[in-house]
Image (cartoon, rainbow, N blue to C red; front, side, top):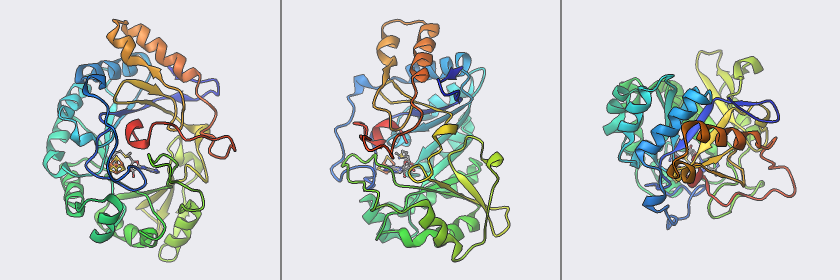
Length: 329
Ligand code: SAM
Ligand code: SF4
């Protein structure tokens, strides 16, 4: 098991498949992109499947989420999903994607064994989408979402980050649209993980702002803490249910005490937290002929050192060197 000194057990593994992306969301990447990881530094498909097998068989990982960068840009994605689906024990598998290209791949991903997707979409307005992501691909995302639903990659969840002056006024419209399409909408507070280090607490839309805005049009009933478990999203029933809306308030209502995550970057580093400043190099061990049990032990030691919290409220907080796109959000 992956336990830490605060008694938490990690059962949810986030695997970043690439740091590259075809969008340039302002809260994530600079306009010109970033210096991408070099190909030889990336884990191969075989290495990724092996580490997921170690995690599922020896370390109690029950859920794997593929992310990035944009995971649909990874050429071997369908094959990786297929091979992970054949592992015993077989972890549940989901994908966090910007949705571009999902129209073409949703059915193949479902057939390969993917259970679910989270698609990121911040706005219903094509012009705002273009400003926010610096690319004119709104239609592609909507088509990807529809394809995911049709393929049965359900429940389809939609991740939304609100930005002041851009889409902050869209919360109720987005929820009405999500209810209509049976997508589960989750708002994520903007976190200090952008490569440009442009985040400010005053410049972000808080969970409080989001809920106040939603309540101008909807009746929201909070779910009990028991319903939440270790899920980062606090959820509310919309107009009595069954539809729900979530808010992931990593900044203003952090959920570190219930965190059940561990992370693997595309270049084979274990991270215990999005905001961690230390990493454990599994790639070097893997390429140095470590056994499965040795890899598992390195992972256990890394997680044992997991900090109590992300420390966003600590005056000494320093943003990690890796931006979100290279960690895997
Ligand atoms: N490219 C894929 C996507 O956009 O879904 C997967 C990777 S992306 C880093 C994962 C999630 O992180 C997205 O939902 C995105 O909106 C969110 N994200 C990126 N930068 C963020 C930030 N600074 N604060 C909060 N969420 C952020
Ligand atoms: Fe790409 Fe996702 Fe970052 Fe947007 S949030 S730039 S889609 S990695």
